[in-house]
Length: 353
Ligand code: HEC
Ligand code: HEC
Ligand code: HEC
Ligand code: HEC
Ligand code: HEC
Ligand code: HEC
Ligand code: HEC
Ligand code: HEC
Ligand code: HEC
Ligand code: HEC
Image 1 (tube, protein in one colour):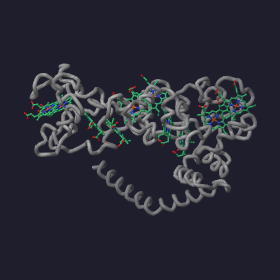
Image 2 (cartoon, rainbow, N blue to C red; image 1 turned 135 degrees about the horizontal axis):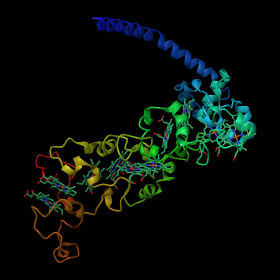
Image 3 (cartoon, rainbow, N blue to C red; image 1 turned 45 degrees about the horizontal axis):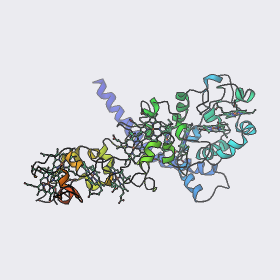
Image 4 (cartoon, protein in one colour; image 1 turned 45 degrees about the vertical axis):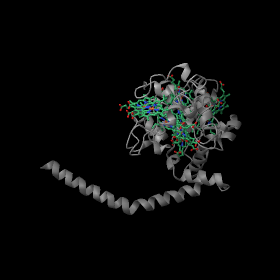
């Protein structure tokens, strides 16, 4: 059977290749690292520099940088960074402090055909001759003549996949966001991630200020306190779950940090298993513990007085009423049903313990 023969031959080729990889790969990687290390500027030092160096060494992508294609200036030729700097001194100074600058300068130092500015902005000769000509240079601002899909295409040329696996078709892509709405590679505004604002939360708040404000409510998770950010739960680059959740379900998102709520429990409370959002709101609430409704009404949305006397929802039962009912005051239902997320006690089917 010919196909079997091919299959066998294929296996041998693969095995041979595997052997080659085992023998050759570590040496090549080592050499690449050394070559890359030599390209770093001599005056490059300090803790931050060390961190950048590690990232840079892990990212030989800069050595493959090419001049970006600009259909609106098809005849333009590359002019080199020096020509750009002559007119854009300030932008170039800010750019110097970014990871891209570090990588591209180092790569260009060893191989002068590797572009710097023109990696992202395209060949510059037509723009240098006529700076006011619309679209002659690839721009990343809302006012530029370069379509958003072209802008993102250039960034994705080096950043496809990984966290951006689901960028295409994501709600941000469909709403015409460009990478540059959240990232500004021209200056180091944020410690990490070349963000357009100082922090992740500020970057999102450019457009989602309402959500950001909810974290100022009476109960909220410590986002404003700097212990977490929007991307602990969301992937702004796109995901398989709405609304842009990092995990496959809401509960999986919450279990990342509240693992004890995953169980397993001897006695499960059905709404907890279904979704934490049955009772909690993620961004902030004016009830305690991020609850969507005050106690005891939260529970009474689903539970009638079954098993209890039928007088719960009368004014007389309130703390100020004639016959205060302990089910409505203090911790309300939780006074007795304390383990509302599920119970492991043999006598806990009603979540008392
Ligand atoms: C002769 C001076 C000159 C040179 C050389 C020059 N530029 Fe410009 N550039 C300008 C001016 C002036 C503007 C503002 C044009 C406007 O506002 O209409 C500009 C605008 C830009 C913009 C914004 C365009 C937009 O649509 O948002 C970018 C990006 C840019 N230049 C990049 C570069 C790069 C990269 C190079 C080198 C390849 C370069 N420039 C070379 C003068 C120059
Ligand atoms: C990694 C890609 C990348 C590289 C490399 C790069 N730029 Fe930019 N550039 C951008 C993006 C993205 C923006 C839009 C920033 C923003 O949102 O204001 C931009 C904006 C600009 C602007 C317009 C500024 C404004 O406020 O409108 C100029 C001018 C510019 N770049 C020049 C340069 C020069 C000169 C270099 C080389 C020294 C360079 N760029 C290298 C991505 C890049
Ligand atoms: C020539 C390839 C190339 C292009 C084009 C490019 N990048 Fe990068 N970029 C890299 C490499 C390599 C790194 C460093 C390794 C990494 O983080 O993946 C990097 C790093 C980054 C980082 C992380 C910075 C940090 O501090 O961790 C961001 C954000 C980023 N790029 C955004 C962009 C955006 C936005 C564009 C388009 C305007 C762009 N890049 C264009 C190659 C490129
Ligand atoms: C809605 C805002 C937003 C948009 C749009 C966006 N990003 Fe990001 N990006 C972020 C945030 C926030 C981070 C920091 C994530 C972190 O630290 O985990 C990030 C991180 C990154 C990183 C570094 C970490 C990594 O995943 O490798 C790269 C590279 C990157 N983005 C590239 C891009 C590119 C390319 C585009 C356009 C196709 C893009 N981003 C569009 C918000 C955005
Ligand atoms: C430039 C504006 C802009 C920025 C910046 C921005 N977004 Fe958005 N975002 C949008 C738009 C527009 C929509 C679609 C809104 C709609 O359809 O109601 C959206 C929708 C969303 C949604 C809802 C998705 C859904 O399926 O309903 C989430 C979650 C989200 N963004 C998270 C983020 C996060 C996290 C950041 C910061 C990393 C961020 N966004 C930054 C503009 C932005
Ligand atoms: C603890 C996890 C978590 C954090 C942190 C978080 N979100 Fe959300 N977000 C969610 C969940 C879960 C939903 C779905 C809510 C629903 O369906 O009622 C959501 C919904 C959204 C939506 C769409 C619905 C709406 O309420 O407008 C947007 C936009 C959004 N988040 C943006 C943000 C931004 C911006 C931040 C940072 C300031 C952020 N989120 C922080 C978990 C989180
Ligand atoms: C990135 C980690 C992280 C994720 C993801 C996360 N939380 Fe939290 N959550 C925290 C931290 C930290 C606190 C504060 C704990 C403290 O103060 O002891 C908290 C507190 C809470 C509280 C108590 C608030 C109060 O005022 O007492 C509730 C309720 C809560 N989270 C629900 C959720 C839900 C629901 C989700 C999923 C949508 C979720 N959490 C996802 C980190 C997280
Ligand atoms: C049936 C309603 C309900 C559901 C569903 C629910 N909770 Fe709760 N949760 C509560 C109530 C009520 C409190 C307040 C308890 C108290 O005050 O002692 C609370 C408190 C919390 C707290 C803070 C106190 C503690 O126990 O640590 C966290 C964290 C929490 N819930 C996480 C979650 C997560 C994660 C999910 C989803 C797996 C979830 N909850 C689902 C009702 C619910
Ligand atoms: C979203 C609807 C919903 C909410 C809100 C809710 N529950 Fe439940 N609860 C259920 C369902 C469904 C069951 C399972 C009923 C069954 O198995 O017959 C259940 C079961 C119970 C049981 C066990 C009943 C039995 O017969 O074994 C107790 C006790 C209970 N819930 C208390 C509470 C308390 C206290 C609250 C408020 C903190 C609450 N529930 C909020 C839907 C809800
Ligand atoms: C003083 C303690 C106490 C308070 C307060 C309390 N319960 Fe109960 N609840 C019980 C006991 C005890 C049972 C078990 C009765 C039985 O097994 O016959 C029970 C049973 C239940 C059941 C199961 C009913 C059934 O048919 O088996 C539900 C549902 C329930 N409670 C919900 C609530 C809700 C909702 C509140 C708040 C409005 C609440 N309880 C307040 C003590 C309390």
